[in-house]
Amino acid sequence: MKKVIIYTTTTGNTEIMAKAIADGARESGAEVVCSSADSVDPSLVDSADILYLGSPAMGDEVLDDPMEDFYVGIEGRLSGKKVAIFGSYDWGDGQWLRDWADRIRSAGGTVVNGEGTMCNLAPDDAGVAECKALGAQ
Ligand SMILES: Cc1cc2nc3c(=O)[nH]c(=O)nc-3n(C[C@H](O)[C@H](O)[C@H](O)COP(=O)(O)O)c2cc1C
Image 1 (cartoon, rainbow, N blue to C red):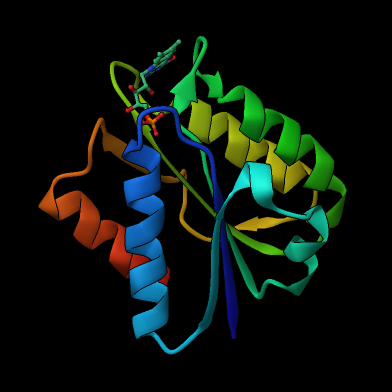
Image 2: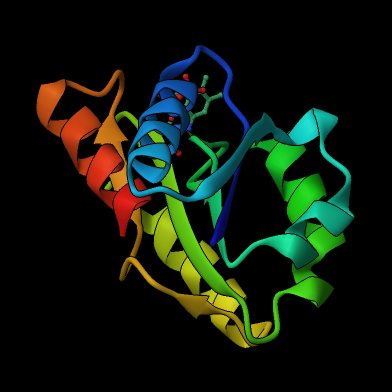
């Protein structure tokens, strides 16, 4: 089982989530790759049994620009793929993750964590535990 976690972050909050997901994934016995989107070859997506994608809410409830660019590059590789999405936000209600989930489903992927896993700003202990559990699933 290979779990690939790819994220973007501006102040580190989504990165904390990504690292907690990676911890949970390792504890589940999976092979794990966890990387910022700017240093990832899109073909890595093909090798993932589960792909975890993370982005903070930016602009007006949209993906961070670097994740938008990365995502557009991999969208054509998502057919039949299990995908989990996550990210940090501040004042919104999760619209950026709901829209992202719709895009992934339209591309033929399956979103395995409902409307996504989100943490308000820096994850607290409960948020870190939720992310670890997501990584273990
Ligand atoms: C330019 C900008 C736009 C933002 N837009 C939103 C938004 O639309 N909705 C929201 O809930 N939070 C928004 N935020 C807050 C960030 O999502 C929040 O600070 C988050 O914790 C950043 O995560 P990161 O540290 O992983 O980048 C915005 C922040 C900035 C700087």
